[in-house]
Amino acid sequence: MGYKIPGAAMDRVSLIWRLRRRARRGALCMVLFCLCMALLYAICAENSVPVTDAIFGIRARTRAQPRTNHIIKVLRGGAKPAIIDPQTLPGVVPGDPHHPIPVLSALNHSADSPSHRKREPPGLFSRLLPRPLTRALETLFGGRRRGELVGNNNIEQFFSPNGRTVWNENMSSSMLGTRLRKAVLNYQAMNKYGVESSVSGQANRSGPELLCQFKTKVDAVSTLTSDLQPLASLTLSTLLPPNPLTSDLGPYRSCAVVSSAGSLRHSALGKEIDSHDAVLRFNAAPTAGYERDVGTKTTVRLLNSQVMDEQRFLSSSLYSSGVLVAWDPAPFSADLMQWYNRTDYPIFSQYQRYRRLHPLQPFYILHPRFQWQVWRRIQDNIGEPIQRNPPSSGLLGTVLMMSVCDVVHVYEFLPSRRKTELCHYYQRFYDAACTLGAYHPLLYEKNLVKRMNRGTDRDIYNHGRVTLPGFSQVNCTQAEQ
Image 1: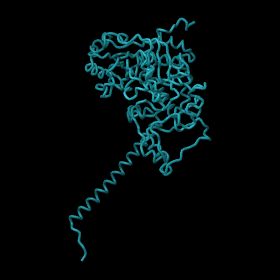
Image 2 (image 1 turned 90 degrees about the vertical axis):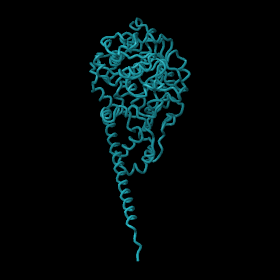
Image 3 (image 1 turned 180 degrees about the horizontal axis):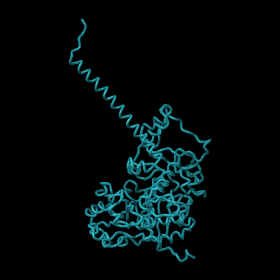
Image 4 (image 1 turned 120 degrees about the horizontal axis):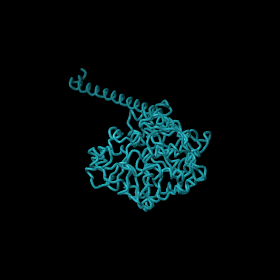
């Protein structure tokens, strides 16, 4: 007589079997969902930056901090370094300025010709899976695309052929690769802020001529004050400072403008930066943990309204020292009420909350006409249409400090020999757009700064340091002669 399994035991076995089957189905559905999202992200990132922003939000592109995961190791058949040392890249001889870092430290290019380029062996899964699917997985889990950054492999298009490879002041959007060129063209076609523009400027003005233009045609210290109409009738006016920015800032002899560029890592510029009378930093750039490279002193912090929209802005000690200066993209007309009723980010509500929490800390908002005066100077000195979006915080902060300082040193706005695709020294996000620009006309800003530079190419190459005179030291009578 055979052994008979009790009915209760059979029910338990059946239940376990059904649960396992459901778990397998659920896992399979989750994998398929993740693959579909990765493919969608890859398609959007390839074809249109605005589409990516619309689906995933701007933060997904500008503030994400992708990590190197084991999936990429499986796909590529090897490990990918999370932080890249530019001097260890193919085609670079450490310490030799005659062998430039290829294409802003991109792993997919070298200074060699395509026929002599050594390709990394593909992994097992990269052979089995279709290329679009592999690229989608790399995009989702790897943190950055491996697409072309330039039209061809000639690094001299980006950097001047003078032995020490520094920024080429004749850079053009035609030298960009497919992805960035599409992004620039998209932003040139968009006109969110009602910009009235025409390319009628002179592209070959000298550095002294440019300095005089910025001095005479840009009101860099224009900020919102409590008596400014038509804002004076609003509750906001009770929290705005009664006097302009110069009442708390300047004049200074020497100033440092410290970018947030990834090339500041391992720069050992901290002591040099702190030796200045005043130091300007940007957004959420920290000093704690990076003192050796970026210093500790913070006199001014320039914030865009996107950073102010974060909850930690109201409570973080990062913003509690120095003078705060905020700005938000505004209509080209600089109409204050139109801007007040339709800001890109809630700058005014966050400003009021912060002022109530920190009533003694100086906090200013830049007048919107400043950003568009700077934009006009860029467009008038570039021989092609630029993005119809405000300039970057980097250039706005530089012009601001030139108004209150005798001499301004700008660090890593123009890339040094440490140039890299790492966007910020305090994050792990790689994208060439952080150096070449997409939303901001960053490419053209760097061209003008290079032309206005009073320092040497050696300073740019070794230290990423640009030397600009303060407007008080610029003699426009001599420049005109």
